[in-house]
Image (tube, rainbow, N blue to C red):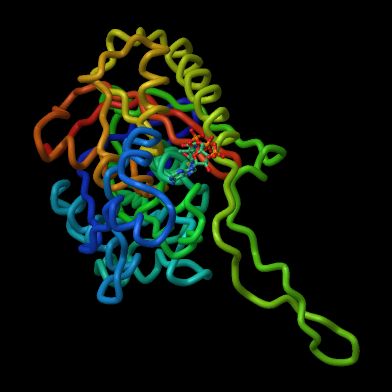
Amino acid sequence: MVRSPENLGGVALLGSGSALPSQTLTNDQLGQRVDTNDSWIRSRTGIAGRRVIGSEESLTELSCRAGRSAMEMAQWDPDSIDLILLATSTPDDLFGSAPKVQAQLGAKNAVAFDLTAACSGFLFALVTASQFLRTGAMQKVLVIGADQLTRWVDWDDRRSCVLFGDGAGAVALESTSSEDDCLIGFQLKSDGSRGDCLNLPHLNQFLPLVDGISHEAGGFSPIQMNGQEVYKFAVREVPEILEKLLKVHEVLPDSLDWLLLHQANQRILDSVAERFSIPNEKVLSNLANYGNTSAATIPLMLDEAVKDGRIKSGDLIASSGFGAGLSWGAALFKWRGPV
Ligand code: COA
């Protein structure tokens, strides 16, 4: 039943899941390809290794594994899912990979589509899903964040290739009463005027067709990044948007159980935590093992901390995603877990 605007419901996070490729690529191994080394990468980024999708795996398969695991935790029947949102900028099919995921999960009643917002993708998808759930238009939504940036990295560009890895994470969201709402608030932002510092642009190559008519060739150039500009953007905008979110909802940084940021660089995580005087023990970080997996980092980290028992039912989490676009956002939510 669709609810009226004055009678909106809530959103509960009931399940989490994640999946990683089997191939591990260490910093030392990367040093065989480009002029870099373990100590430079660790000291500038905190990254020690990353996972890379190989020939036996795919982004769709990883997304399914993560989604299935979240469904299992939430104890959902695949038939009961209304929507599958796949946040990715690197689909297996440019027309969208979400329908393949829907079919492979056997979620035959679900509508499925991709959502592209680079490293902010998961957060944007979480908020998008929550709108369908609050109105009661949908009851169960599976949000998956998955990316395969190793497909689009220039492996000869040491300034960017050391940062990225592949992975997938998912959450199972259910419509609930407003009293049980777990998504306390959010803020989302875009600024395309600053987007040139991080791109994955099309090839811009035109070929003759017939009678002087040309057409553009398909394909994309590798990732282009101005690391210092992106770094400055992150350490300026993330604290600002988090501060606004906390203020609007009258939440003090002290009362947060966890800070769950997009895992781009340990120095960015440390800098944001310092701004709010959040102690290290409350800052979730696994980028040493996986690098920046784009739309996957937040649900991947969430799932790890839920499964190892760090995040408990009722814990209050401040999260922020940021990246290409430029796009960034923040959300304040409570983890519920299976009931
Ligand atoms: N190994 C060894 N040396 C490297 C290197 C590498 N992988 N990458 C760059 N260098 C060198 C540079 O060539 C430069 O040398 P020079 O001084 O002789 O010219 C030196 O290290 C410093 O380069 P700089 O670009 O100033 O490093 P930095 O401290 O800014 O760190 C990043 C680079 C990319 C780690 C950092 O800018 C960053 O993390 N930015 C954010 C990127 C990001 O998170 N992107 C995704 C957002 S979703």
